[in-house]
Image 1 (cartoon, rainbow, N blue to C red):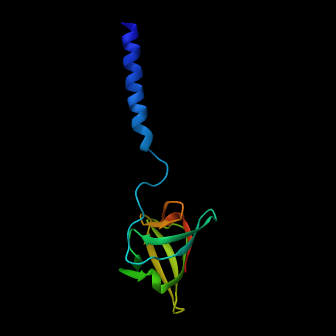
Image 2 (image 1 turned 45 degrees about the vertical axis):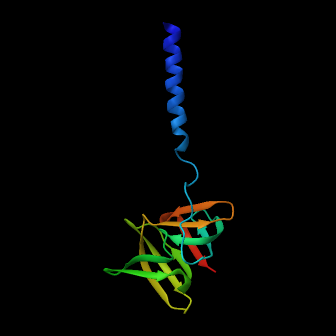
Image 3 (image 1 turned 90 degrees about the vertical axis):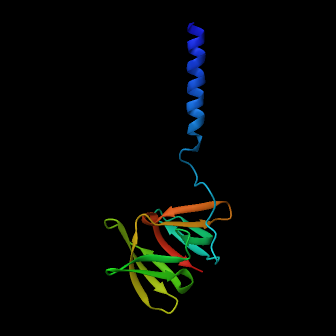
Length: 136
């Protein structure tokens, strides 16, 4: 009887541990498909720089944020650089440099996620973890 209980316990423990294989780790899935192949150099808060292609924000080829009381979208192909400040509540302040030379400020939601392809695999990062985006 004791051997039977031990065998059952081992089987249950094995089944539970095998089911935990998908927890944590690298991002699952693919880089979202977009109409444009935006190429950027992204710098995270630790100073790590990455070259990314097929770059998007939440699967879209534009940056979305609050400007005053309204919402605003700016296409990445119209941007030269984006500098993100420290988190403030549920937003991250973003200073945008447009290719025209004009500057805009937006507040990006902390829930925003940037996606891209590194050449070695899919990459994703939350807006609060980004320091700078330089669009090529």
